[in-house]
Amino acid sequence: DAGVTQSPTHLIKTRGQQVTLRCSPKSGHDTVSWYQQALGQGPQFIFQYYEEEERQRGNFPDRFSGHQFPNYSSELNVNALWLGDSALYLCASSLGGGSDTQYFGPGTRLTVL
Amino acid sequence: AQSVSQHNHHVILSEAASLELGCNYSYGGTVNLFWYVQYPGQHLQLLLKYFSGDPLVKGIKGFEAEFIKSKFSFNLRKPSVQWSDTAEYFCAVNGDNQGGKLIFGQGTELSVKP
Image (cartoon, rainbow over all chains, first blue to last red; front, side, top):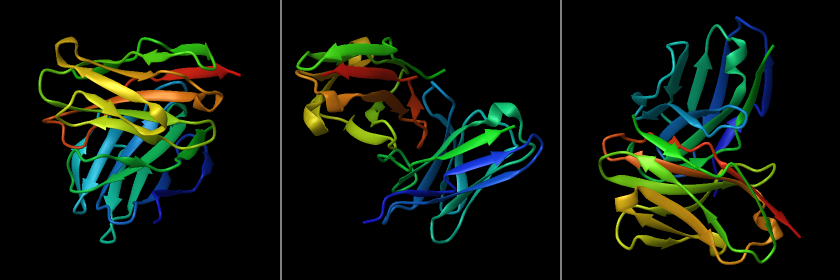
């Protein structure tokens, strides 16, 4: 039973560039949530996707956008990168689009230079 | 605004010592509560959760947590820690009108000396 997978593992970008991160949910899950974890902090909720729609959004600017595909996998896109976007980006999967238990992937470490 | 506070940023214990990590939240409605653990080099793993029922919940590896509604607290406990419990521990809350949004505390780093 595959857990949550994310790619790539690490990524280095320069300011102003755009980045796409990918996530495949745990087998049987249909909901994907994205979090940003800065160094020394707890994860912060970016948004959640269910039935290919953004269902809920945290306090992040429009530069952060996402997509969910019919196979439930998801992408996180960040435009116009700046230094403060450097963080670990976590994907979590769950079932049913609501408050069910979320299971986390290993994350993508993004460094913006 | 909903928030979660973990008072202990770094805890250092010797093996066999008892552990209690504090977690308080601010939210007026019904909550689901979680503790996650992040071992060095590994991803976040669910330790235990509370949705309803008995406020004393037991998780993996001998951990337990007690939900005290009147104190808005969900403290994590373990009677006797092991060196392998060295990790970062996160408390998280999901409010009843928050959909799937988890609010995390800033984490407590636990170091267990052998």
